[in-house]
Length: 388
Ligand SMILES: [Zn+2]
Image (cartoon, rainbow, N blue to C red; front, side, top):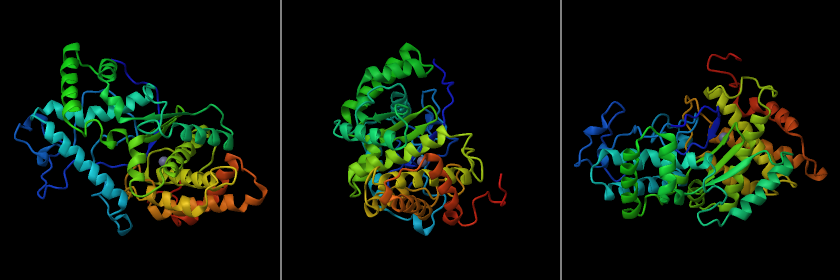
């Protein structure tokens, strides 16, 4: 077993995942204390447990796309109601669960493999650089993404520092990849691994959702170690809401690049409250800054060269992905706050347009700090009003 000791810090897109079929009128979800063995062959989607403990020893702080948590129940203010993206994710969520059930013989171990391990395996693959150098399910965005990365490198003066990696559902079709991950990231014996691979092979060959469902490639995050991962699935699901997939790629890349700029300047940049301490206020602050950096780059005439309206439409969709968990340590800011931070980034770029000047990251950071109180009201600090 290879233990992951390298300290990485991740910032993930909050994709949220609802492990229940919306087609079922009576949902009785089993709580985390439930024993998986209680799931019998007669079980339906009503009784698939929400908290699933898979076989892999791999934990990336900040990544929760595989935890099957219903992010949307906790806090639902009006501005976080139904969105086109919610409809798309709900569709694929149901398709995945129904696809699982259609191939399931009731073996509880299959839940661990298909509804937990698969997500982690695809994260590990991204980190181990397995099948990561193309973008889009058929590689159709590879050239575009590579050009965008070069543009970001040049704009922010960060040549060859960041490794941008694709993530594909097809990786999970390769049983050799699954074997490699189980061998290196689990305690499973060779016999166990053969058994787990048998489960994988069964679902891969009998279900059109496994592993084809876009949730299996829906990661989007940046790590302190200079890696950005963007899965095909998160892009395709956003594009299905009517957005131009290229602008979606650019928006996600620019946002995650913004986090890389923060990581590079970690310890040097001043903030009103500490960055990356995993409190709602801290996360909101760094997320809003990433949004500010995103719009600055995307609308700058020497950056993405997009007009604001086009950027606004795409970012507004990102921001409605579902982060209204105001008390969550991973809180990104409300959609309105995020859009306002982005608009301020655009205004900074617009004011420089005539000169074609690109500000240093430090200058953009300073500009962000000056607009932050206006974006979040007076509530930059924690709930007690303390500047920590
Ligand atoms: Zn972010």
